[in-house]
Length: 230
Image (cartoon, rainbow, N blue to C red; front, top):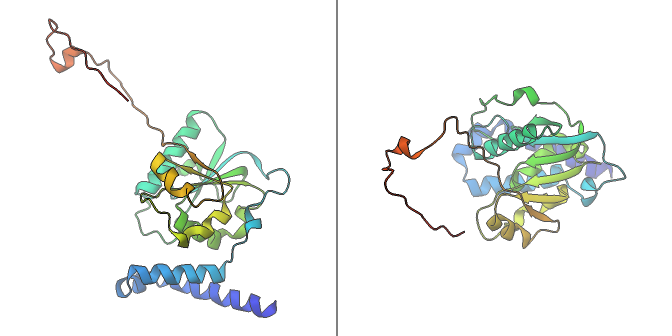
């Protein structure tokens, strides 16, 4: 047991050094090699067990949502997190945002939801707007404490028919998966041991002024009907 703890501690040091040295490592190593090494290091430094997502009685914290994601990132997965925040605010659902950066190199300058940021989880449900391959980074940074005795939902994106086997460990961190489309649901469901639910991204259309035919210079003497099938 002592030897195992020492070994785990050494791997954690190596992983943290690799994160610090990312700017040097990236230009001189291929992406496939970095992905392989990163997965091996994380598995050794922060081994995951099924129990870390298990609820022991009533979930901890107030009723509400800990929204975990790249809330400040100027990228698609960051916008996904901000859309979720907008939806929750619209229906007055209690929530807080844990802004995560990890090893993401995107610009982190979108502060539109900074007023909702919290430093630690306070609610009884976690929704991770973090894709499957990045869930291990969440575990590496926060440990099991962020998962324990909370209901954990991963909102994942994946746009290929086959979900990679090397990300299967991420299922051990969640109780269910939400996805934005039927395609993603079909892909992940084939390998998922937990429920997969389609929850599309919300959209907001603001129409500040009435739109009439006159705005588009349509002639009023003619009318047209366009059949539409869904």
